[in-house]
Length: 351
Length: 205
Ligand SMILES: Nc1ncnc2c1ncn2[C@@H]1O[C@H](COP(=O)(O)OP(=O)(O)O)[C@@H](O)[C@H]1O
Ligand SMILES: [Mg+2]
Image 1 (cartoon, rainbow over the protein chains, first blue to last red):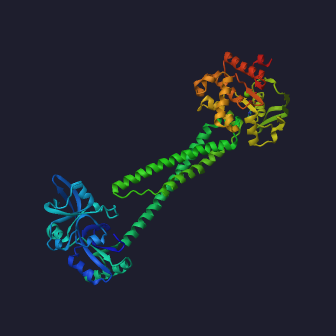
Image 2: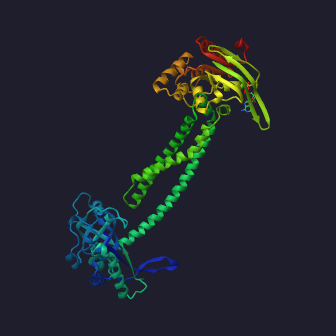
Image 3: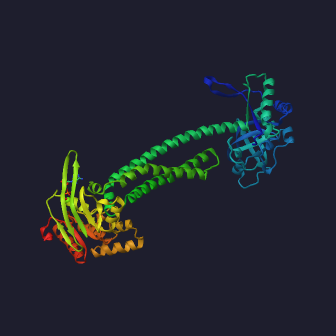
């Protein structure tokens, strides 16, 4: 999706207790989409989209998929290319044909290495079967924040509305501004027009989400998330550091005699100091490595579960390790100094 | 070579002063074998600690190799302990976590000797006390007599001016104790200077 895409969603009627109920207001028709496109000078296109979940069946294999009913413009608005065959065209829309374009993962799951073009698959939607012919496969797409695109299938919106949903209304619109610069103007125009058209001063019947807005929301969420995680990390480091200090102090006390012996054999204060500092550093360094390993594992697990790409920046790994070492150095210093300053005779007498 | 001049050591225990040494003076020459005797609590260990540069006198002077120890800082004292003095304790005082060989290497580590030469010198020292076949063992895997031999090897390894032994047979049975004493005699014959605290009048004779 480009930065000039604006999603126009139907408003959700408020449920009780301030929660938002799932039932959306039925206002979005195909005609309204054309109308918005015509009256808003900054808007290039408005693509209607109907969406539903369905089972795709091939032989005795089936798979859950998101079915998107849309028109020929969807591909361009989403900057989404085909791997095989073709996308929905005008004649498919005019005649409400039972044709389907599969996301890469669906094609892979249903057909493996075989050519899916021209094959027939069954679509099981709300307890009814429909037979569709595969005419295309989309290229593989990175997993975005809006979900897994590779797990979607596309059919003509006319087919969706007449045969599947039996409704005059679509799920939402995807509008494209003429350019990224005109996105803000396009949002204003659509808002103005819809308020008038729907006589909806309170803006209860529709919601606009521009890509920028979504990104803004996401970055503000991630910023506060980072802050919270940073806080947790800081507390963990403090607790860990105090833990290291504790362990080192116990170690120094337990090894008082060893310190005495080493001093009797010619160890200087700085020798004892570095011995215990190195010990604290290797303790915290090991902790750092273990932490990086489990951090990476956790990130991997979450990425797998959410089907997001796994990004572990080398900087954050270095930073984490560096911090662990610094914590070891800082909290190991006091016990090491305590060890170094011991009086040799007292240390030797220690039982 | 070594001179103790009117040395006093006073411990302040709260309001009570404990005089562990009340003005000791003596002189020891190179190659001497000196035995120090006295009842328990008479200050023998305190004196050994001062001679071993582990402690400093409250009053008086201690001079070793022409240097007045009371005027030296911690690092210089550590160097003297490392290069000039070999200490043998009643409780052996080996590091339990590492091998006998590594225990003997420790003074050489602090002297900055390289690893290869260190191992060579430590093995030689262990051979001279009859422990060549125990180098890989940990202290808890060998007998008391063997532990004390290892401790003697450790005291010898830096070729010190003087070997100090504070009741080295105190934790050993009579027979093993005699063997240890024989090693000290041998070291004395080879030209080492030895000061030993002991209860046995025969040695002091
Ligand atoms: N760190 C100390 N604090 C207080 N008193 C001590 C300390 N070290 C030794 N003393 C006292 O000094 C005296 C001599 O002790 P020490 O030299 O160990 O005797 P020895 O080795 O002859 O048995 C004893 O009375 C002992 O209690
Ligand atoms: Mg004593």
